[in-house]
Length: 66
Picture 1 (cartoon, rainbow, N blue to C red):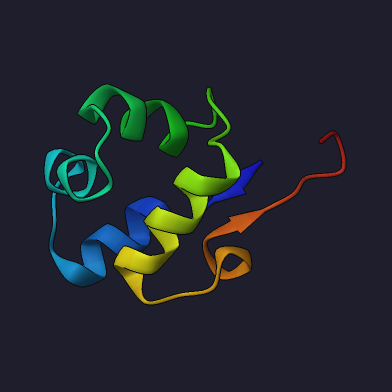
Picture 2: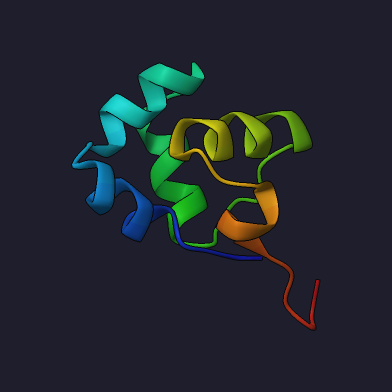
C-alpha cells in the first residue's frame, strides 16, 4: 500500500512523533507505515486521514500487489 503521509506531514509541518501522538500510536508505527513496511488498520488509516483533513483514499493507495 502506497501513502503520502510524509508529504501531508510536511504540509502541516508536523513530525512523525506529533502525528503519532494525535492518532495514539508510536512514532515507530508512523515510520513503518510511511516506509510501506506496515499497513494500518482501517481505523488507524481513518484517524491519520482525519488529521490531514483528507479522505482515506487521498492518503493511502492500493498497489496492484495488495
